[in-house]
Amino acid sequence: MSGGWWNSAAVSHGLMALFAMGSWISVNSLWVELPVIVGVLPEGWNLPAYLSVLIAFGNLGPIAVTITHHCAPGRLNERLAIHCIQILAVVASAFLAIFWCHTVTVAGEQRSVPFLVLTFVLSFVCCTSNVTFLPFMFRYPPQYIRTFFIGQGFSALFPCIVALGQGVGKLECKTVNSTVQPEYLKENFPAQNFFWFLFVMLSISALSFLALTRRPSESQQGSLPPPPQESDSGAAAKDEEETHRLYNGGTPVSEEQVQVEEQPPAQTFWTPRNIFLLVLLAISNALTNGVLPSVQSFSCLPYGTMTFHLSVVLGNIANPVACFLAMFVVLRSSTPLGFLALVGGVFAAYLMALAALSPCPPLLGSHAGVALVVISWIIFTGAFSYLKVVIGTLLHEAGHAALLWCGISIQAGSLIGALVMFPLVNIYNVFTRGQECVQECS
Image (cartoon, rainbow, N blue to C red; front, side, top):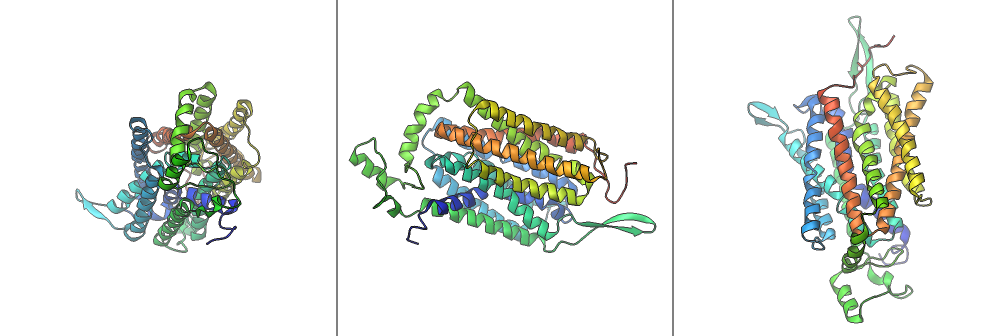
C-alpha cells in the first residue's frame, strides 16, 4: 500500500472517522434493536431498564482508567488499552450474534443471562472509549478531533439506517371483532443478522485503528521535513525505536513527548474558561445522551411512527453534518458558545414539554406539529453536536490531560442524564405512553 494516496491526509481522516465510529456503536445498536428483541427475551419490556443499569455499571471502565492516570501518571499505554477494548468488543459482538436469544434458568425463572452479560461487556467498552480514545487524539493535529466526532456521529447514524431497513417498529391498525388493534409487522431480517452487522462495524473500526498505528514511516522521509526536536539526536533515535511516530498532516508526536507536554498544562488547566467548557460539555452530553433520548418516543410517537422515524434519522444525520461544519468554523469565544447552548436548550425544553404533554401534545394531527417536532430534533441535535466538537477542539489545544478530562466530562454528563431520567420514566411514570391505534385526544 505504498504511494502518496495512502499517506494522504484524506485517508487519515477516513480512518479516523471509522475508528471513532466504534466508540458508541455497540450501545446505540442495542437501543435501536430493542423493539425486536423485547418480544423474544423473557425480560420483555423490562429490558430497557436492565440495559440502562448495565450501561451505568459500564462506567467502572472510565473510573479504572481515571484512577490509573491519577495514581500512575504516564504509565497507561493508551494504544494498547484501545487495542484491548476493541478486541473485547469484536469478540463480544460475535458471541452476541450467536447466543443473544439463549436463556438460563435462574431461581426457577428463565433469564437471558448471555445477552445481559455481553451487553455489560459492550457497555464497558463504550464507556471506557471516552477516556481512552480522546486522550489518544492528542497525538494528532487539532483538525482530527473534529473528524473524530464526525465518526462518533456515524456510530448512531449507521445502526439507525440499518434498523429502518430492517423495518423495526412498523405496525398496522386492523379491526378485529369491531375493535381496532395494532399488528406489528415482521422484520425484514432477524436480530441475529443485525448483531452480525454490529460485529462487522466493530471489526472495521478495530482495523482502522490498527491501520492508523501502522502507517508507513516513509511519509516522514524524503520530501517531508523532519519534525522539530527539543532533545539531542541520541534521544531522538531512542524515541524512534521505542515509539511509533504518527504523522497525519501535522507534526509527529511520540508517546514520550505527549507525557512531557502533558505536565505543564496540568498545572494551569483549571482556569475559569476551561471549567466553563467542561461544565458545558457535561450538560450537552447529559441532554443528548441521557435526558432527551429517554423521552424521544413520548415527544414524537403521538404525531405518528413516521414522525418518530424522521426525527431519529434526520437528527442522527444532523450530528455528523454539524461536526463537519466545525471543520471550517470554530467558535472560540465563551459568549457565542453559551448562546449556542441556550438556543439548543430552548429546543430541548420544547421537546421535553411535548413529552410531558404526551399523548396529547399541541398541534396534534397537523402538519405544523409534525414539522415543528422534526425540526426541533434536528436543531437540538445539530447545535449540541457542534458544541461538543468545538469544545473538544479547544480542550485539545490545552493538552493531553485536558482531553482526558474531556472524556470524563462526556461520560459523567451522559451518566447523570441517564440516572436522572431512569426513575422518572420507568419508576414514577411521569411520561404517559399513547396506545397504538387508539385516538385518546378529542
